Image (cartoon, one colour):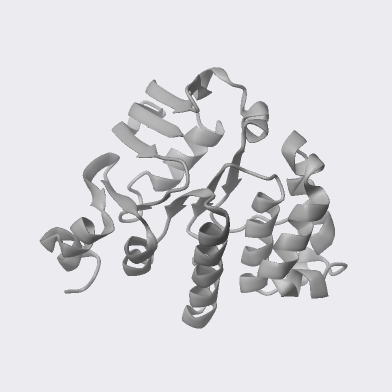
Length: 235
């Protein structure tokens, strides 16, 4: 579904991504982990078109994504839930979800998608008319994920969904993500600071450091690697 090969990105001439290659197959949950500053968010922003690529290729369903304008990429079925949630604080919960449903598929499946989003995140139904800026951090994260799902995506990119949340709230968010993935077999590309959880639930994962993929494999391979155990799992 998503194939990234030898992707290179630079800011002001300074390399940020240095030949990154990764694949997300249909129905997979793939995790990207690594330290702060490794280039994980830049990777997502390049797929979305927020940041231009300096070289390499990104293909989505065999289509050259780098030739598609950023505004058209959501219509292909790519939803990006950014780091820091970035909900529209002055709009209601429902209006935020409606903003996510502007893609052709999202508009067509709006009522069905809204019902499913409310089933996964009941608080969004309860607070439908409440301003998004008045929600708690965890509720805003649920809203951000719901807004992504409202576009009826085929690939959901989640950037640090547990960031800034209390451990119990982050656990709840993770459980919802896994529930959604298992129920829909939606392809998910996850960047997450909670490495143990990310690798436990992902079918495959990539470790990104200083803009390079230094390790990749299925979840058992990565969890059993001594470098991962020492650097990220405290073992």
